[in-house]
Length: 405
Ligand code: AMP
Ligand code: MG
Image (cartoon, rainbow, N blue to C red; front, side, top):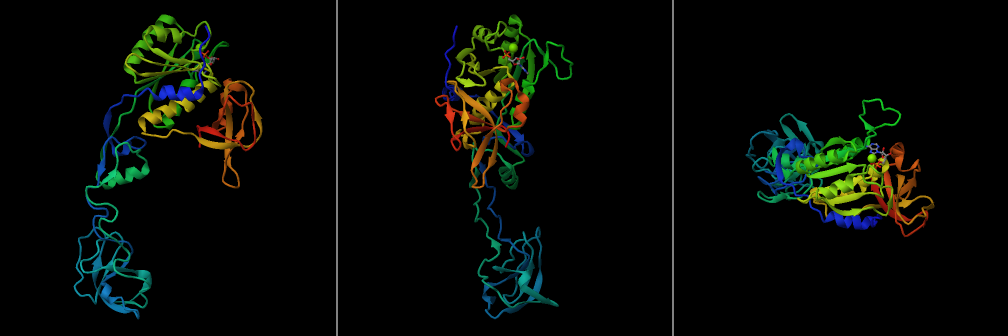
């Protein structure tokens, strides 16, 4: 029976309708990187919390900013981490350190570089353009106490980590990590540490898939299931109860032992499509379990699994978990003429670079087809060549899917 093949854009549309029902969890600050905030973060005090000295130098009163310079008696030293001092006389100064509180009574900071010291006196011969509040980071200019400083849904990068630390969050509520099962199928597969017999191969897809996920902050567990109908049925039923997302590799093509579509059907996992007008990865199957979990069944050819996981699975996870509203791919310019004459979208392996005008260029890296996973190490992205065109011209701008930056 012939399956109805669909366009990659329709794949995007169908899978985007499946939502990942994930709760929230509290994690330690140091584990929050790459996660998505599940709460608004408020400033617990003004930002900065006090009038903060921004240069090492002297704190003075602006009435002393004489165009001909001035000399000050040093009253004391205001260190960072010390309580605020008070400038007693406007004609005097207090030495101030970066990060310290501005002494009460001072309202300008003159950097040491403009000063000269003789005994307990400091002379400034040129105040340059110093004025009221120069070299002072004023209390509350960045944020006021209570302001929402980071919003729910925001991705936590190293920049957010710094802000969270500043406002005292040693733990933070984030979108929980989904439980993802990566399932390799096939009788021919043996473990990495085994020596394969003539008719066997080591399983690699599950490891590259797990690594693809890990690279993007998602944990997963690996399973291997052999091509036995009843066993597949029992194990898959258990896995679909235990995990939020199931990702298979192999077992969805037209072979006699490609049992997955039938097993899924019997388990009530409803097919959304089987077959995409693309190369590699044409036999891609996607369905939804009774409790609305996504099941990605990717074709077993290593490059097919790799392409489908980077092109469809990752963007979907990112969209679901990282509040990423626009999932549009970057585009790159093809750097040679290229032909692909089949009525399929072709995902061309390319190596990217920037040309002298700063344009992102894609250079084809052709290898041995969808089984040649070593070629993936020479390229760093897939350029998406649409099905409705056979000849692509040098300079044509096309969507690109990176797996290595
Ligand atoms: P299948 O989709 O099961 O027909 O597999 C297609 C091809 O991919 C066959 O040559 C399989 O041996 C190979 N293959 C399937 N799963 C894996 C895997 N986990 N690692 C490496 N190769 C695989
Ligand atoms: Mg197989």
